[in-house]
Length: 173
Image (cartoon, rainbow, N blue to C red; front, side):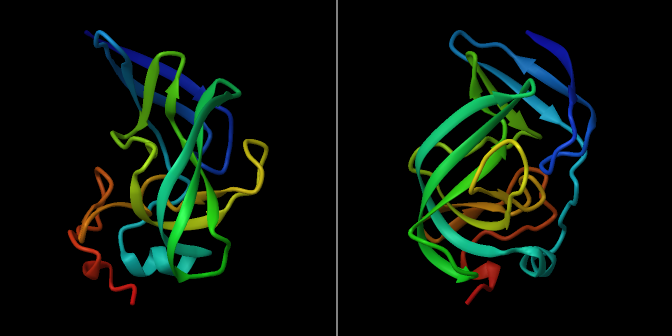
């Protein structure tokens, strides 16, 4: 069963303020609500991601916490830093994403899910400054800077203009 959901996002660093529309897909367990909206900045090349990133790292999600802030679902993932390609940081990093599992619904942004426990990814991060979370980073372009890793293969975000399928294709070393 599909319905249209319209939500008003109060301005933030993750998604520009404005009206966003989404689709609700019901299942027996958890509804998936796909939200789409305007990004503060979208990325179409690796060089643009690299230029804006404070940290580029390979991470593994250890703890995932979803919550609501001003009627918008967010998730903070505490991730183990496996390898740093650029920037400095500790052994862990907190990553703030729009969406997550909240009130029996899985909120995705343009078909992209937030981290799940044990997910591995190469991420292009920017230090977050705002009211939603403390000591956190956001993924550049909301989802553009998150490449899930499975062995030597990577999966770019859905809808990405950056099409690579291997860690070597990112040319980070």
